[in-house]
Image 1 (cartoon, rainbow, N blue to C red):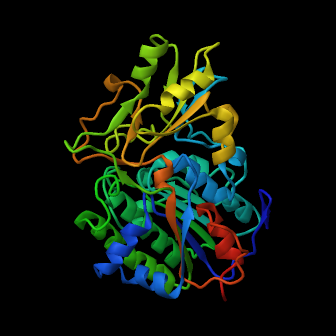
Image 2 (tube, rainbow, N blue to C red):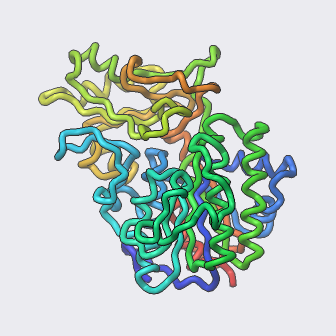
Length: 404
């Protein structure tokens, strides 16, 4: 199979690719060390495990779509959860399949006759991942609304045997894993893609009781998929870091407030690509922002001034950001700003409702959250030498470079 310029062998056994939202190796290592994730420990010791880079901005939509297309956002077009649509003159969610500029590996295999299944935690990803897919594709969030016409399956709740989970819970991710196992037991898809939510990782650091409990929950489901004869491949869409100060409050830079002060009220527009309908656990505060300057503004001067702000790691032009991070130029502003490891970016202070935060803020989006695991339950063979793999190499490795 050739998809987006990359070749993939037909699977020699069922393949389950898992994107663990908000995961980094420290979560896995600490869960394994605590003795609560023995299968993950076996993957580390007896399979193959690499530290890889995810896509910047380190958000859910760009990385999930890179994983299932095998290419960066400069090719597939999805560079955030949210963006400013210049043609429409509006800020919109980037959930509509019309924004996807490349076909998925999932759809290509399904079109060639493979049995394909996709289960996501949140429904925001379902339509993008399921574009042109003739197969099963549904979300845990709306598993009670599945129809054969729209999702390729009905009776998902009955199949999984669990109640509809809350979108703000670890249960949402557990439903994804349980669904993956039940689909493997009952339909045995050739290719399965499972994508979780980072609700727990937004609240709990690696090694914390809640974090270890999450990986302890995940572990037996992965072990069951392995026992059913599947190749299990695991990666993440991004890491996660503490983003709060000594007082426990978010360590935030409110860019819109600063730009309003510098350029005049409402002259510039700040877009936060982390924005999605599920802001309770992050308050729409992340470590990547893009700025649209008013006509005639001095871009170099704005970049220079933004770069002087304490907590800003990087302030660069559209062209430089797109070259460095492989992003689509027409879907970013004039300037891209990335904050430090423990700092987040906001628009105006008054626009962020942080009342839902019931724990000190942990978030993502920047370069600091780029390192993610890339793990397989089989050893690798014949991987071409490269400086560092990407999370969107997962299907290439799983299909082309694992030992029999």
